[in-house]
Length: 168
Image (cartoon, rainbow, N blue to C red; front, side):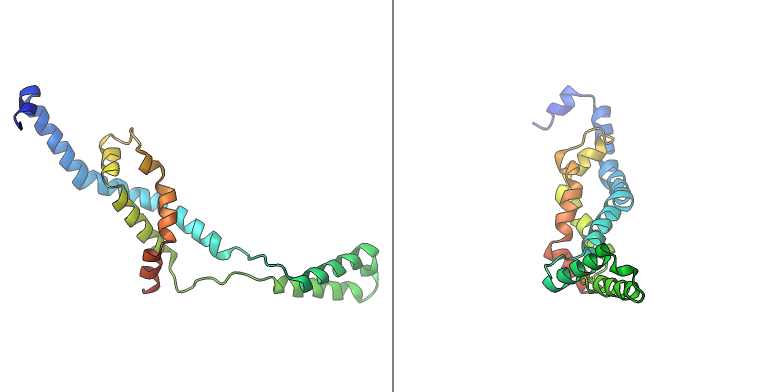
C-alpha cells in the first residue's frame, strides 16, 4: 500500500515534496504568520478595539436636549448679540459638551495583548489551511484565511483573551 506512490512517481520527486513540506511547516509558515500578524492583523485589531473603546455612548438625556434647544433658540432669535449673553451662551455650550457621556476606557487591558491572543488562537484554528496557503506560495487562499480578520475580531472579544490580558 505504501509502495504505490513510489511506483507512480520517482523517488527524487517524492523526496523533494517531503523536504518542501517540512520546510514549509517548520520555517516558512511561522515567517508568514508573524509577518501577517505584525503588518496587517494586529494593527487592524488594535484600531477596531480603540474605536470601540473611544466611541461615545448616546443615551437620551432630556435635560441636556432641552438645554441645547434653548441655546439654539437664543442664537436663532439674535439674543446672542446682546452684551454678556454671548459669553453665557458659549459657557453653556462648553458645559453641555463636557456633560456628554463617554464610555469608560478599559485601562487595565492592553490592546496589544488582546490582539496577540486573538491572532494566536485564530492561527491555531486555521491550522492546515494556513499550511496550504503558505505551501501554494499564497496563490490558493482557503475560505478560513479570507475570513481571518473577522475571526480575530470575534476572538478579541472572547472571554479567553480578555481574561488573559486583564491578569497581566
